[in-house]
Image (cartoon, rainbow, N blue to C red; front, side, top):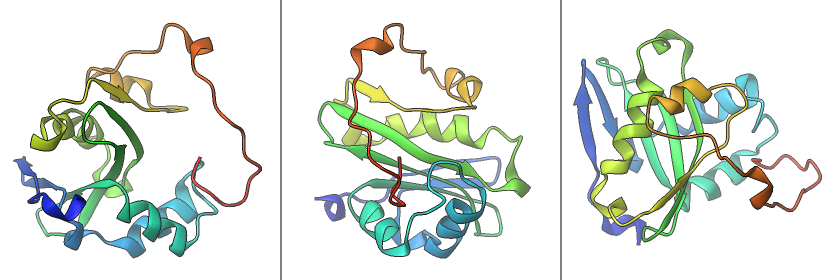
Length: 154
């Protein structure tokens, strides 16, 4: 089903946001997770490939064509979407790319009926508030099944 969608693209200030899977730099994504993320430092390349294959992927590309930012959406394309794994590479930070990504992906033609968008962040609340996200007023409503750390994305 994911392959049925034409890539969604938007341009801003010379950057291109694209859902084209062929443009992804999997090695750069894996390196960022391994070296700079707190949430996916132990992910294997095999796990990353499986996660990407089953998600709506978003890359932001600099004017030179290289990846500047990344995220993925875990979704049913009907009512629910979970934005996760958002990062901006250091050379491109401070330009509002993550906020742009978090806002623009909701314009994707296949996401128009999605009524529940969620994400989790330890340290970037302001970025997502600028994109329209609100802090959950009743976190006690949400539940999860804790897993032992086995190198999976949390």
